[in-house]
Length: 90
Image 1 (tube, rainbow, N blue to C red):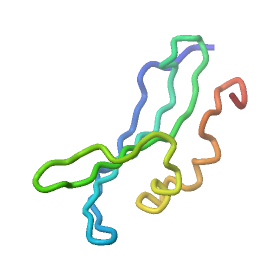
Image 2 (cartoon, rainbow, N blue to C red):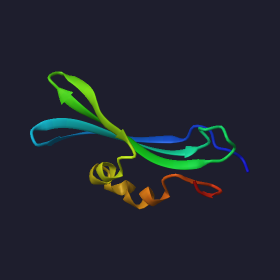
Image 3 (cartoon, helix red, strand yellow):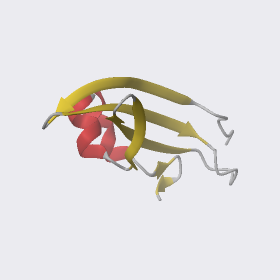
Image 4 (cartoon, rainbow, N blue to C red):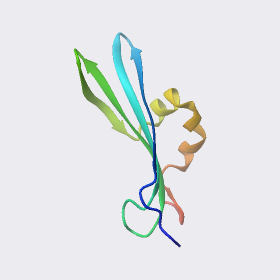
């Protein structure tokens, strides 16, 4: 099996406001062998930044699937494949 190198699709950033606070979210869909172990794997992760004054500050990130689906509903069908490799579930 041939491994895939650095295949990442970035969605966003999308800016939104909740409870008077402004945030921006970015989602990343990755299918590659970023671990270098000879196995292609699929992940969907994201980052949320919070606007404080005039600066963006890290708020949360990683496996934030509920937030990703809320702001990028087109990714919802693929969440179930998070942490799956071409060999099967991880």
